[in-house]
Image 1 (cartoon, rainbow, N blue to C red):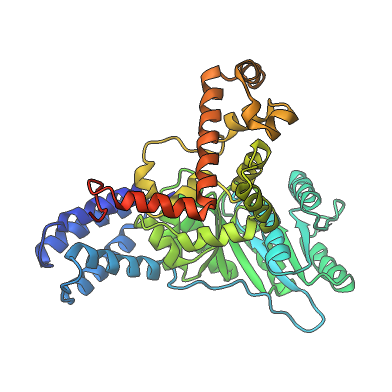
Image 2: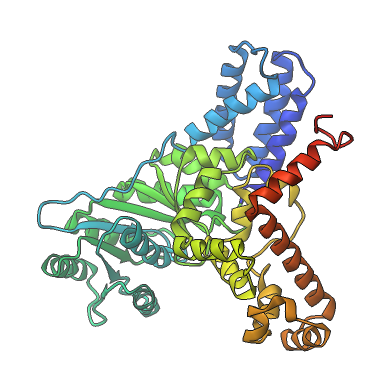
Length: 453
């Protein structure tokens, strides 16, 4: 996500490197490249021009402080303008409702945009993060697969689904679902509506009629971020008809240029509230404009990374691992457990992009969710005894593990060595006296760069 845009904006700022001051000429050269980067990202040319004009106006009116360079100042101004372009600040989903009634969330969007999947993700988010009791409602009466898909997701997430396969009236279904929710103490109703392959009058009239009938607390427009500028045009058509409250961008983990995220807020003047970052049901993030601006400018997003780790990491498991490390009892079962904890946090490439500077270091590398498959296969080919006793894995055992996992013996040897090195480091980190001794030795190495003589 945004990789090409990030690279091009970084190259644009290099124009200012070495300059002692901001001038109209070097600002113009820089912003010309920024504007090109926006156009390549499929941002509307009017938005790109207005964006760079605003930066130019603010940059030329600023005095460069002695503590920062012109390029640093331009990055700061661009960051602030990017965040403002995408909404300025986070706006939460509205879950307010009349006394005794559930909050109702209405989904809208084209077929294939990810409405049904997002409905499931949102239900899980509200259940786990907001302590709500959601009810999913299947109102796509034209596509039987949509009802089945929502019911499958509901069963998977242990969230009930209200459906009526015999009815073709989405208004009746949604009204009965809300009454059912009220009677059974469900406090949030998520209504998944029908989509079309393109915007048409029948579709628009139907979604407008449903909205008028159920008066939702929140109406969300779900759009596939990979459709680029078409996503913006579709958003405008929907907003003109149903005046939705917020936007959801799906598939931001795909090969998207980012134009939709940068243009939609400006075009329809409605906030982006959520972004889908993967296929897993947990792969849903609240949208923060400032954090997204950080990522676009290659600054990472440590706050989101820490939040995601806190939400999905098992603290009890972490405490057990810590005790085993202290006793030098860390084994392959523990290692496999740690891998599974990392995978729960989401798409690996997305996680790397949250670390400041990491995107540059890993540029060109093929990082995907299969990165751990070979390691998992090797560990799973070990016997329970071997996993519990890493030091007893001799040459003949390694040969058998290699055959069982479908890997070359060199791959098994490599993993065993890396695991041994990691255990030694863990043991050292857990021994405060040994760490202090090592630091003292390092300080005595006068030839080491940065070390005191």
